[in-house]
Every structure is written in structure tokens, then in C-alpha cells.
Image (cartoon, rainbow, N blue to C red):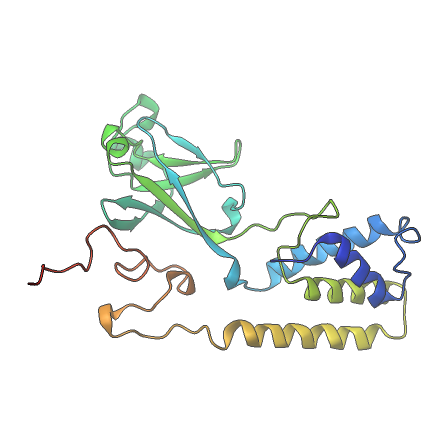
Length: 248
């Protein structure tokens, strides 16, 4: 969990040598807030954040062609979409064009199941499924699973929390402010920020490598295997799986 914005503002004022008195800091709040949000966005783009990989399930409906994205997962950050058929996840291909319309023309209302492809629609920020799911999908309570990196949430109110590690955001924001002001300790602060990032990434990855597991031959948590299909018995367990025969 990230730190609240009010605490990050106090930390940032301390790092750049400003007064931490709230009354004294009213005038600089907008400027500091700008740096905190921009630095968080830059860090999000420049580095990988495996702890932010999330899955979001969306139930499909008979005759529904377009679906909204989850609020915390935008198109640019999605890496995979699967469709759940019975107890097996099948990855959907990307792209819907003239060839697909020859087989099942969605514009004419043709439907089928299972769906096989998806495509982003920027005009209304939705994604399309092809072919359009039919009654069989709804009867099976079918769903599609989206996987990607959780979207950064902009901080506005004092109670808002950072998406990325607050310490890194504060330090790199302080570096930019000190460099802008030609402060003598800007280089020292940059060294401190880089060291904090190095230590964080060491902790982030050292004990989180994919390790082979003999039973089932899987590799553990599917979130540590971006681009890989969830493994039966490791990432999900359908009803009755592994129960075996009754023993007397």
C-alpha cells in the first residue's frame, strides 16, 4: 500500500529544504503535486513493476459485442486476454478485420462461441470480442480474463495514495526540484535516489525468479510469467480437480 499524498508532500518539503508547516506550504502545494504525479508516471513507464500485475475478470453476455475496460487496467497496460472455456483458459488473438467478418460477420449480427479474438476501440475506449458470444456463453457463465500492469492513479486529494513506492517518488521529485533551483546538493540527492532505486529493485527481483516445480511441471505463480497461460493446478483449480478416487 502506498503512502498518502499529505505525507508525501511533507516528505518532499523536507527533502528539498522547505518548511513542513502546512500553513507555510499552501503556496507550493500545486508545484510539489505536479512533480509527484509526473515523477510517478515517469517511473511507471521507465521500469517494470511485477507487483502491480493484476487479473480482472469480465463476464460475457449473449449478443454483447463491446465491453468496457476495468477502471484500474487500461488498454496500453494489458498484456494478455484469455477466455475461460469450461475449466481451461484459452488466449485470444488480437485483431479483427475483413477475414474475420467473412467467417462470422458481427455487423450482421452473427454470433458463435467460443470467442476467438479481441480488438481495442479508441473512440469509446472499449474492446470488441469476435465472434460475438451467443447463448452458449451466457449459459456457461463464461468470462474473459484481462492481465496487465495496474494503471497509475493520479493523486489529487490529501488522502489519495501513491501507486508506486512513495520513497522513490519523493526522492526523484526532490532531485528535479533541486536541479531546477541549481541547488548544491542536487547531485548528492540524485545519488541517494539512484541508490534507493537500486536497493528496491534488488529486493524486488532477488527472491522472485521463476523456479521449476516437479509436480505438474509448472513454474509457479502465473503473474511471474507474463505472457504465459495460467497452469491447471497451479494458477487455478476447477471443482473436483486433484480429488482422486475415494479411498476406503
